[in-house]
Amino acid sequence: MTTSSGATPAATRAGTATRADAAALPSLLGAISAERAHACVAALAGDDFTGRRVGTAGNAAARSWLAARLAELGAAAQVDEFPVRRVPQVYAVPSARWHSGDGRGAELVFGRDVAPHLTSADLPRARYGPVAVAGTGDPSGRWLLVPEGTNLFDAYRDAGDAAGLLVARAVDADGWQYTTLAGPDPGPLPVLALATSAHRALGHAVSAGGAWFTGDAPIRRVDVTGTNLYGRLRAVAAGRADILLTAHFDGVGDHPGLRQPAAADNASGVAVVLEAARVLTTALPAGTGLSVAFLDGEETGALGSAHHAARLRAAGATPWVVNVDGAGRLDDAAAVEAGGPAHRLLAVLDQAGRHTEVPLAAGPVASDNRRYAAAGLATVGIGAGMAGYHSPADTPERVEPATLAAIARLVTATVRLAADHLTRRPPVPAA
Image (cartoon, rainbow, N blue to C red):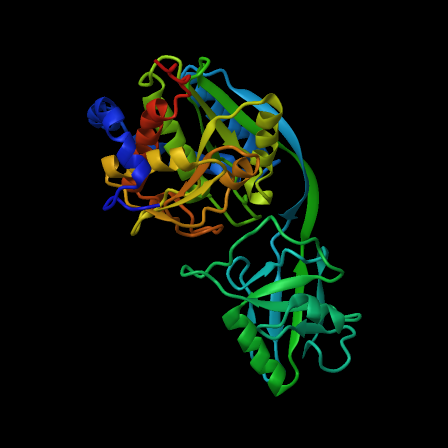
């Protein structure tokens, strides 16, 4: 992907054909509202939706709210369910404390100093025991401090009948650990992640002798149902372009006593798609198809998009897909990842970047776009940054309205130009 300073050959060839469309873009893009998009982010990140983790009441409430927004745009919302297995759920506020024989110690704060590791077995009641370094001495009944840089699965080898494992994890710039839902299955022992500073302090106490630790790991796995939400805004005519805008609406969810609003990831992407769809619904050539998919289960392995992509493939549908994941903070450039037969779509996106003056750069967008691309659909994923990734710091106040507007304009311009560029016209007979 080039930036706005240089044209790709495909974009150059397309330039003459789209001059009329380009002339109409300023008024179309001027209809994008940063305020409306940011209000959408604030609503989805609100307390009523409890972080929108798949399978929760807050997730279902957010989906209903989005269905009402699609209805306002004239789309009859459809839901499509799929199974999601073994979703990690912290079901109580973990407690953890360490102390040494000389009176040093600390109560560890959930979300900052300590959190159940994704591989942890469930430990509903606090367990007390001495602390030793993993791989040294008899592990029985001891909490084992896993040295930084040691593979967790190597630590299991020497764990025996240990009380549990204590691993180091870096915190973000705001001092929070991050939450993940997708990853390996739990192992045989409780595992607590300690902030690096707490892990090192405990390590110094162990070296001095006489360190003790007490903690629990209230984490279980639940089978739930994910639900995608689809809306067809414009029917597609034979031989015309069909464009699908996607964004996942789920988040990692709240923990007991710990709000995780999921504003940038990915209420911001949803807001961009809604704002672009609002403008485009009445601004595309006759016969151009436009639909929206708000996807569930992205945080558990992009399961919603995998389900939807399989549905499209089985139906023989081949829309061009534009996915937005993270539109919270535009720094140097928006990241773009193309997949599938996306050459023409990528050329149009490049041209849209020029019209909107949004700089673009090839970069990883590890989200739902990869599922559509793997199904053979022309796909681009767009990401424009986020603060407070998977933590309580991902709040609406840290989502920039200007970034929301810029990415909504980029998506709108891409779709409007693609409606002409990507029309499947029959070949012209030879004279």
